[in-house]
Image (cartoon, rainbow, N blue to C red; front, side):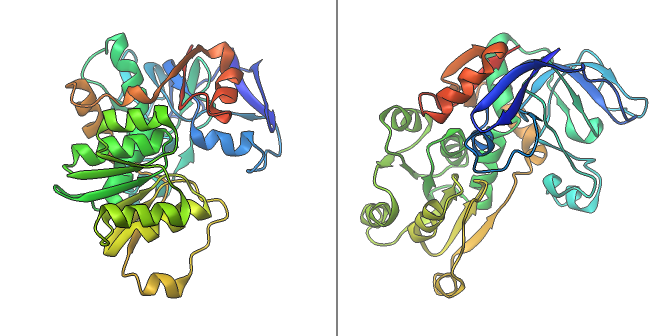
Length: 338
């Protein structure tokens, strides 16, 4: 079969590889119904994250189970399943505490920009839908495997509560679904920080009540103006740069909560500054597995449509164009159909 391989910055090829197979008794192999390009894939694509050798790409997936190892008990061939970008046993102490991305036996799932995928630790990683979904639900179910789950974690880690004022820093797919998550959690005011008209419109559609186009210190000042000098109860940092983190911390009220789910690159925090803000910080790789049953239920019942973040659909064979479109900000998120 063919899969997306990143050879060097800017060089994604759709190449022949061996089809995945069961390697361990806890594995499953699934036939993908859809996959996509993630914003975090752009870090190595742009050369910011090293690519030491040709690397299979993709970690967002949903599809139908084709085969399982002899020790797999909770998923079976023929089921439609969604999983996280980290495989987890869902039984270790860290998993039981709700942090499956820190599982003692975790494995990163990669190679999902392909027709089929091997998923380790299948019983702890995969969650089945109630039935076979209709085609229109597949994009939103795919979103649950990463960007919706990460946006949801961002909102939860920032302690979003009913009636809260929330700021979302970042207008990529995760930030936009952070807006949706905050709305579903009952936030009264959601300020989306975005300088792009199309993304501003989608942010409003997903629940944003205000838009701040300014960045950096100017963005912080605008948030303070909108909140009468107080700042936000909850701030979701969904980018991972020094500027976005400083903007997030600066936008929070004293005693407020800041979550960070953007993969950090070059981020440094000043301890003394933090000390006097009383800001709570919490984040990291989103434990998507913790939230999957809830997110699937929201999508299945039609209460959430996170698939709206896919504004470009391509055949999987055109995966390189998906990377180019996202890198050039011609697309928020590219949906790939095997």
